[in-house]
Amino acid sequence: MIPSVSAAPDAPIPLPGAGVHGMRAVLLVATLTLAVLSYQLNATMITPVLPQIAAELGESIDHVSGISSLFFLSGGIAGIVLARWSDFIGRKRCLMVVLAILVAGTLLCVAAPNLPVLLAGRLLQGCSSAAFQITYLLLKEMLRADLFGLSLGVITAVNGGVGGVDGYLGGLLAGRFGFRAVFAAILLIGAVAIIAAALQLPRDEPVERGERMDWPGAGALSILLACISFFVSDGAQAGWLSGRALVWLGGAALALAAFAWVEGRRAVPLVAIPYLRSRQCWPMLLTTMLTLAGVFAVINFTVVLLSQDRMVGYGLDSATSALRYLSPAAFIGVLSAPLAGWLADRVGWLRVMRGGLGGSVLLLIAIALRIDDPLVVLAATALLGLTYNGLALTTLNGLGVLLSPKDAPAALPGLNGAAFGLGANLGIAVVAPFAAAGTVSGYSTALTISCGITLGAFLASLFITRQAEA
Image 1 (cartoon, rainbow, N blue to C red):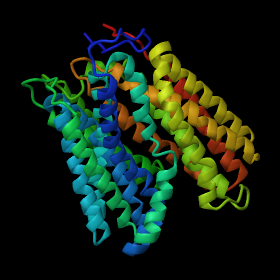
Image 2 (cartoon, rainbow, N blue to C red; image 1 turned 90 degrees about the horizontal axis):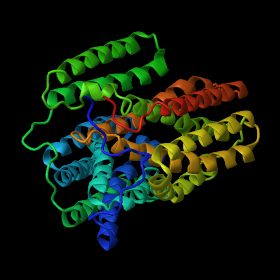
Image 3 (cartoon, rainbow, N blue to C red; image 1 turned 60 degrees about the vertical axis):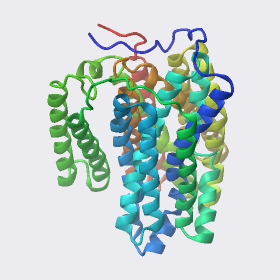
């Protein structure tokens, strides 16, 4: 038998039970928001100051790019491993460990005398990605049922930063006090998050009582994700059939075989193989990966390059480009994500997700067809804040919790988090050779590919089933 899911995503929400509500719910959500914000600011505040970090440390921008790539790679692995570990040691205890690792990594970044130390700190900071998965589980397990969707939307809104303002503030801090001031600000928020979590989160019991974490399976899966990530990055730079790319692909194949062998022999596996084959799992992960690969690359890469291209694009400077084509979508996403969760609880999570994906496909088509019209592109990217940042991302996170097996509730949220990072990396890698050409046909081809990938995400979502299958 395939493990049963915890709830049918399109079933009516249960009647309110004895879960946390009222002011206690507000304090709980505020505490968890601080926890995930500590991670998210490490992405949104640091990215704009990478050139300054390179200048202050005397490094090339190519070397400094590892500050972001290693951070997200670490986050993808930790999101699976540490979130699943919370099934064995309890959510609060695991979240406290995650935040402590974040603070330790941030201290390293503040004091880093050189790039290697800074990269070590970023690896530790990336582990705090698990705060998102643990937070989603805590919302499901502690809140009154009718508050889950709305609260998850609030947390998801943080996933895009603070409405686009955080990147701007990061630039101001770095410009006046140096890049270490940005890490110092993040350190302060992380410290407050630890104190709030210690005071506000009740101690909970592990789901897997008396069992041991599957560390061999976690190790094999971590190697698999790392090999896939390096295959994508090296394949995009050196060619998909280059020697380096093929080595990483071979490593991924070996790690996958090792993972399947280990999981088939564990009494309590990291992720049960039968569940991976179920229609609660593989279509969900494929939908998430393709959604990020399709839309993220458009908003955060292709349109950014197009808007700053002085030859065939709109000729904007970087600040104006971000203000016009990044901030509106982020701001609308912050406003719409809580409403998306509220709506999903009432009309169905799958329906809202498919609606968001369908709307995103139409908006991407509009961008691809009217690439020469800055106003159309501006309006379409802003509306992606509703369809993608709001509807799609909120429901993808929610379904990761609702479709996870009862006996391993952290399994799918962790895998889903890794699919987010892998999809974003893959999407940019696929379209980069076309968009970077700096021609109208190159931008059009990149956008057409993204449209096709996002349509694939919508089609994959049709395979997600609402109930467990035998």
